[in-house]
Length: 101
Image (cartoon, rainbow, N blue to C red; front, side):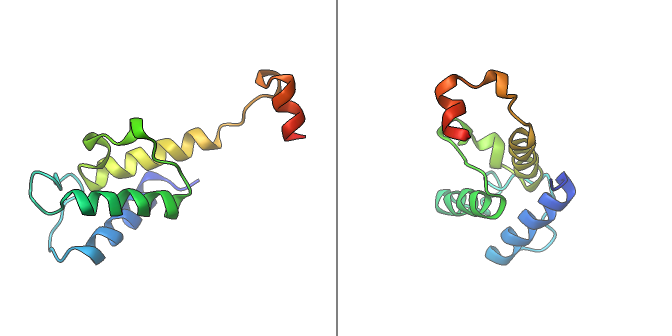
């Protein structure tokens, strides 16, 4: 699993390659500063999904999750952590167990 620092660096590189801006801080609010618009927000969520192999669900489409490099890195790291937690077989129903075996 990638740590938050590595995730943050990957996200910063993507944003920097898409937007020409110097001195972008990890906690700078991307939306309030006018650096990104709704189209770029969609591009960012698509990048995050592809690069980290996670799903950004409708409930995840909250500006707080993507307002800064740091916020996005924390969001991605939390998704990766949830994905890394194994599901005990005892919690699977019989039908689900058959499908996974």
